[in-house]
Image 1 (cartoon, rainbow, N blue to C red):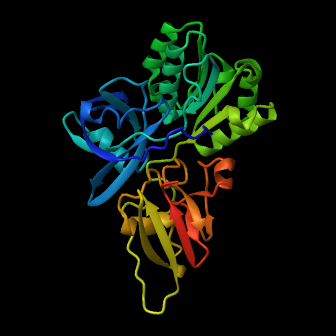
Image 2 (tube, rainbow, N blue to C red):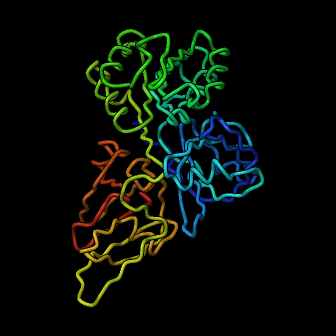
Image 3 (cartoon, rainbow, N blue to C red):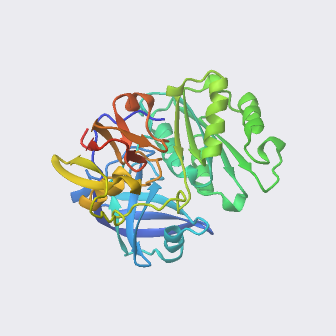
Length: 369
């Protein structure tokens, strides 16, 4: 995955106005927000980063993460939203979001970025469905930023009609015909090439790497999509001798995320007399606050933090984005899932607080690390 940004910036929410809503497919939209001059620095971003949107729907506060889909442009911020099956927020956005509406939008975060954006590089990406959104931004920026950079994209969708940003990709191909390779793979529609027709399983990925995009010719890889596809690509690239540091990946979950409930404002916890508790000290923005959590509740650090600090940072709450990461300064925790932290971050004591449950009587958590 990508390396950490050189300057850590806390994600903050601001109210932005929707300037435009454009349907990309029947079930997906591109949303353009206006960024006022006063917030220009707050919303400065690297291609490949994401924002979180906070909105109350059906009486419940919701927070969803969406990748920025275009290379940086002054005064605007654009994201792609695809309707997920059963997704409350994505369905509302696709059906009801309109220009003039105002939403709470978090400043950009994420490390799925080009490590050296202005240096020449030979890049490749494998994306599926809405996984194209950050990749589109990366492609545009890399090719525009250096005349010697190249990019190869393997992009999987069910049908041509389901393919997000197909016109934008074609425009980029017209603009950079010798430096951009496009390989559209359709899983439920026959293409003229048998290799590009069908599911991107391990066998098909291996054949594509053998014939179309050879790993030994690529300096940096970007993988974005569901877990199974990303993991299969990582395993295949490793078998070809591609080093971990050459591969960045981002997982796309469904709108509703994992089966466990998402924290939004810290679910209520009742502590009865005599209940054994964990004592959790939270350090955030230079201020320290302490909260207790019943041992039997298996409450995550993030949920406990949200009960006393509603501004505790998080976006996906599924162990994917890394927004909620913090250092454990004292005590121990058990982290259930980790799709965001690198081995060196784990060695330095970082955890994903949305996935971490205390295992010691006292835990001290530093979000400012």
